[in-house]
Length: 278
Image (spheres, one colour):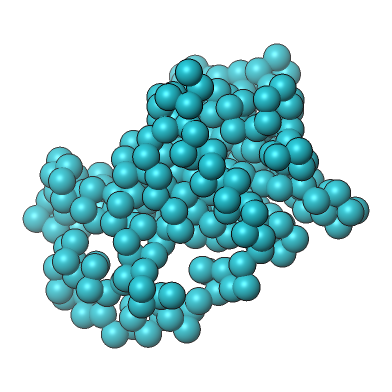
């Protein structure tokens, strides 16, 4: 039954199709358009027909909606020039719809390691466009982000997640500015052992991110729970103050934190709590 499906095990296209109202899924710039990255093949990397980004229009509870879903199975869900432009354009068009009196909702499915290193600055520029588009669109309608799978959401796209009006996570999700391997490479294994999975999840896992107030809803890995949480977030409307506007709460905590102290789960829990933020 549809209600029993694991959301994590679905592909990006299947996730978008199941979240939208039955029969309303219509993909934009899908695989048959074959708009692929021009930068991967010269580097000996096999391209993907949709460049790892699914953009679909449809309805949610009968209202116009757009869903942009990153395919984590392609290049770790990395964001390149084409995939990033697809997501940014979808958000920009949704904002334009709202300005023209068409209340188009937006949902982002974020399974991404961040910028695609093979496309360097082009990927970074695309992510900056996504940030600007979210900040513009969220003035009119909630922008809901969902992080479900073990690919997680890292790099510049973790900032995109932070800009969303509401963020939904599963226990299996991960969220962080830098991935574990990157931190280990830069700071050393004594500082951050990327092979220590319990430690990684205790710092960046969905459960701790929810408890710390960096995510708004934690759900089980079940399609019906994810969809119900998404619809609930959309129904809440535009928040009075977005999380990214709470610099009066976050900046003093970060400024006063002694970075010589080894951060661990207990330190994170002491520094940030949902109740404190509320």
